[in-house]
Image (cartoon, one colour):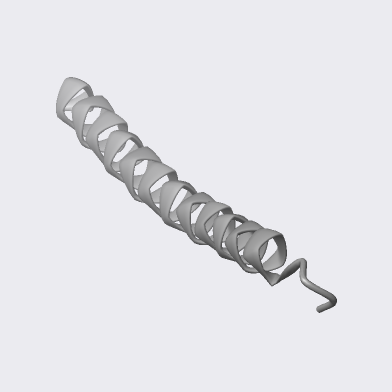
Length: 49
């Protein structure tokens, strides 16, 4: 790497960390949205009765 390894590897690690965090955050947000949607449907059904 021509003496630039100390800059390249941390950059790759940081990029990988950001990508992993992005996937984790998206899955978490999706799970929370499903919970909210199910709760809203349950409330709507209970109001119909």
